[in-house]
Image (cartoon, rainbow, N blue to C red):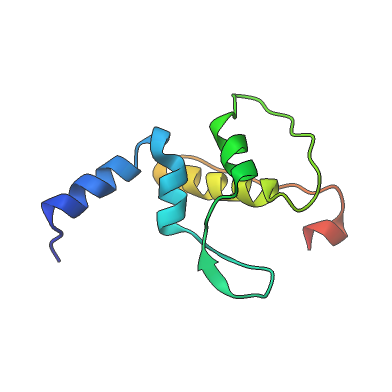
Length: 98
């Protein structure tokens, strides 16, 4: 199966690290609060978080801003785009993890 030159250029652009938000919006879907599978659309808070991440980060956050979901999207992207990557999500207790 062949793809067009335009599609190949877009895919090449999406794979660059500076375009990680667009990559996630293009390839990742999430369940909304009603359980419907929808495209991942960043909120302003999520976009601010992703655009300001450094090498090591501590996020003091309130609930329901979607910070954890944004980080999960970044982790998925990292594992798919970069060879030999691994990510883990750890919670503070088993109930939360489930």
